[in-house]
Image 1 (cartoon, rainbow, N blue to C red):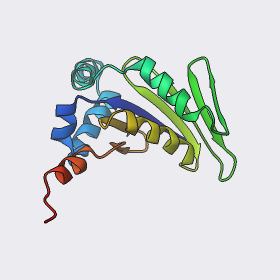
Image 2 (image 1 turned 90 degrees about the vertical axis):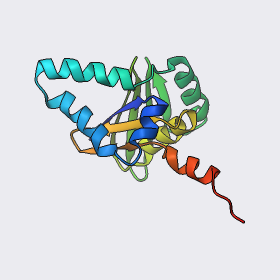
Image 3 (image 1 turned 120 degrees about the vertical axis):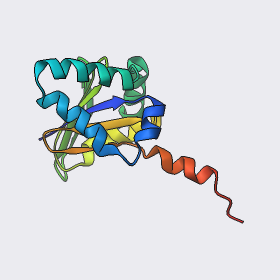
Image 4 (image 1 turned 180 degrees about the vertical axis):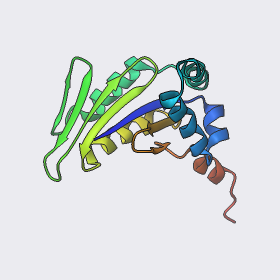
Length: 152
């Protein structure tokens, strides 16, 4: 089972740490594994670099994007996608400061959520501390490089 916490980071932080994702991962990992005193300090650091989640917008966009999808359901603020072939399921819960995506099977169901989120904001960063998986849902700097390129 995979369990991601997805944070919406400040644009300046996202821009600065693009390409340095292991440093961000280390911050989230240290919060999980540190002493109580360290975890309190690290939690404040994470709050500082994160933006509050636009929870109403997220609820609306997820429902709007997936309501016609086969295998999608929503109950008590838990969004669920289940795919039969190949087997894949994912739950998404919108918390105040982060999203939780729990998935199993193939990657298809969690990818559906990630695609919706990346269209909302390019600064979402996903972390699975247990499996040591992390990264941007949408690489932000790549698009910025292309805007300044002349193809003449």
